[in-house]
Structure formats: C-alpha cells, structure tokens
Length: 240
Image 1 (cartoon, rainbow, N blue to C red):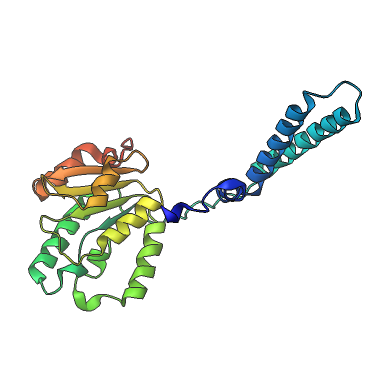
Image 2 (image 1 turned 60 degrees about the vertical axis):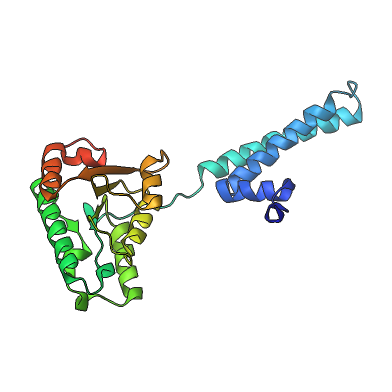
C-alpha cells in the first residue's frame, strides 16, 4: 500500500494530463477550471458589485484559456507514420534451440513453407531472420541482432509468429512479438492445436486492446491451406 502514497492530488492529476494530452490538454483543463470557479463564485454576488465584475472577467479569461488549449491540441504534433518496407515479418524460434540442430532445421523448413505460401498469395516482400541466417554461426552479436530486428519490425506492415510444437526454453522470439504488439502492428500467431500458449501471448489474443489473432494448426499443410483459403483475412484484412 505504501507504493500508492503520493500518487494523488492536483499536481499528480495535472502531470497525468500533461503526459497524456500535452500542453494543450493541460491548458484546456485549466481554462475549464477557471470558468467553473467563476460560475461557482458568481452565484452569490449581487448585480453591479465589484466581485461580480471580477467573476465575469475570470469567466472571460477562462474562455480565452480554453480557446488556447483547443488550438494547442489541434496543432499538437503527431508521431510520423512508420516507413513500411516489408509486407510481412515472419518470426519463429531460432537461437533458443541451442545445439538442437534438428529442431532448428525443422523451424527453418516450417518458415520456408509459410513464406512460400505468402508469396503465392502475392506478398513478395517478406522478411524473416530465420531464413536470412539459418545457421547458428551466422547470428550477429545480441546488440546488433536486436537493432536489426527492431528496425525490420518497425518497417513491417504485418507480423506473423510461428510457434513450433516444441518451444525451446531459451527462445527470445517473444521479444519481437512484444515489439510488434506495442507498435500496433496486426499480428497473427500460428500455434499447434491444443498446445499451451505463452502466458502473455494468450492474454494478447484474448485482449480487445491489441490486434492479435490466433490460428491453430495440426501440420504445415494445414497452415499452407489456411493461407491459400483465407488470404489476408488471416490478419483481419479483406483479401485483394
């Protein structure tokens, strides 16, 4: 309970508004407060009194402040749109397989066939680190790898996560899923039928706050058939 102390009061509330809506939102709220105070104070003053004139002046000032706040909100700079270079980013566990080369090769084959299915759908510009560096000796250092994948995800219109039947314990692919979800990129998760999902991936699928869809598969043929049949509808889009 002690962590909640200090998380209230006027300064905290104003700080929250500033963080959420910027200076325009803060100025707008202050203007509304000024008008409200003026109306509240003016109710008890007789006509023609100096106090009433001050109330009227305060109301006019509040209206001016409101107008300034609206202008600031309208002119508030928005984040520039992400430059889109790839039509789909395909992710699957790779580094987490460690010395399990058989599992790694199975994942590469799975991704390869999914990419081919997307190509047949007309999505030619597909990015996947699994196919660009299929061997563990080709992996970059972690810091470089993160920077490369960060830029690739930010440049992708859609994100597709393939979860194999057996998830390697040390996989870091869920980091890329978190980035895509946070950026609001339409996300599809292919998971083996009846296989348990990572806890927060399951939560994202169930949430209405993010764009995450789950499609279950029995085998790779099922994934290929689903992509062929549904097209872009697997991402919640209308197929062209």
